[in-house]
Image 1 (tube, rainbow, N blue to C red):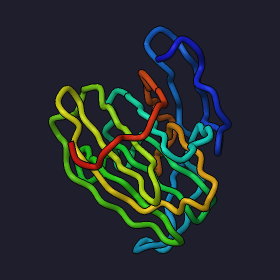
Image 2: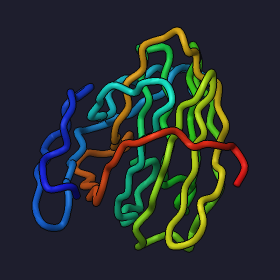
Image 3: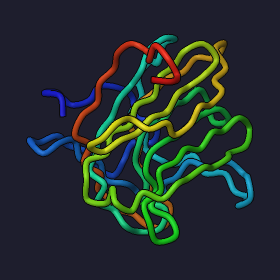
Length: 191
């Protein structure tokens, strides 16, 4: 982790968070989650996200250790405007495997996932780039970046971004974040 505690404002503070030589450790509270209506019929706005400004033509990159294995445990990046407009991307453990995916919420949530069982126990890197009316989400472990999602983003809204963690079916999930950086947006959707 960078040499200082990650800066920002918590949207729903976690049960605990601390920095040591191993990283920035975040412990979730009971039944924490972000979801809005679709299919499940409920709205949850209790996940933990440490947010900063996310201006146009910028990117945020995060890494963490994928070592969780209970249903719906999750970590990654959170892009937030308000309770009805947000995006989360990362790894969620679902149906017996870690799933790389994203949830885009514009009034109601959607969900896209792809299993990444071979990523278990490794350091995951996630990058979200903001340009124009779109977010580009990419992820990798040791290899090349792979495109996860191209998502719409209303450029007229105020957006914040940062790390997130949640555990909808329990409490006490500890996520170890190993780095977070910001910079310029990606120059192209395709390499």
